[in-house]
Image (cartoon, rainbow, N blue to C red; front, top):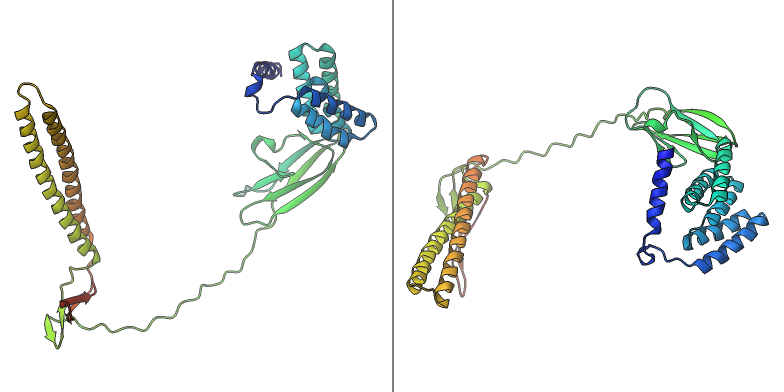
Length: 340
């Protein structure tokens, strides 16, 4: 406890040295004092909820020990003991930092009294271990060491929700009063029992007779050409990739020849000193070398990839290609169509 208090005091001390322009919210001391005055008057009249609204806004505009004390006092009166404890701790630490002994003594006394008033609830998980179980108290997930421990809370009604995979959720409600100490055993609801429905079997599609493969024939205006079963879409792509790879290697050879030519011309103009034209030719030669490397790598990758595509392609049935003549006012030739 002494270590944590010292740490909080150090953090508060560091925060006092932050320049006003670097703080997230500007400080308005005059407005904060006015709201504190109004909040204190409402608290004296027993209007704690209205007083709390003004006091919280006053604290936002300018954090003062007296504001923290009045906020904690209102929260205690409203039964918000957890929030009151938080603000009494802040008031105590700020008073310790500023050397305000009367406020420090008051905060410590009120904290000790508050500890005896706060109800405590132990939430125990019972039953066998279930996958995906979650326990929420008032919407807050409790797990690990938070289960089976007497945790302080506020007086009033509290709800515990238990969920688990494959189980119905179960809710528990418990009312606590000041100085109460209760234990609540919880478990998920019963397992969900869903009827097993067999998936419908789709009707079989009628068999479609496939025409028998034939040799290359020409019948009428259309020529039907039957290919061997080695051809399919993947192998067509493989052939295309190989073609692009060959083009890449050809471009690499041309670029390398161009680089050598530029380099020779640069050397001819650099005897002994390079002219501007010579330096430009040397730069062009370097660029051509880089292009050669890129084309060489791309071409090699494409050829290697085409080989992989070719040898891993599944065997197809008996693909066919049909050829039909085309004649028109401005064109003539053959059209090819078929399956691969």
